[in-house]
Length: 101
Image (tube, rainbow, N blue to C red; front, side):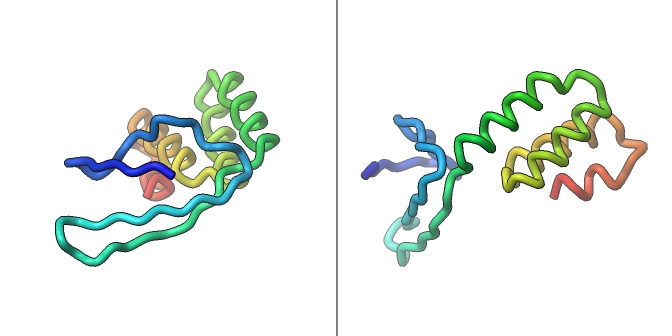
């Protein structure tokens, strides 16, 4: 169990989360009611696949394929970040910005 506080909207954990494990979190702002959620990390095989694709993604088309792969394996946050980078690089393709949301 980790307990901490932050003044911002995020916190960096002092440990690495294990692959394929479920986790839960709870937070409260000031004296407000606590809220929480559960999530599961990707399995080790999916992480390895994503890292291999990330290392090979040099060209714009390769990075599009990487974003699609991340989306497909359930790495939603990483996929949105990849789409956002692609959208910044190619503002002439508005669909990319839509995928980043």
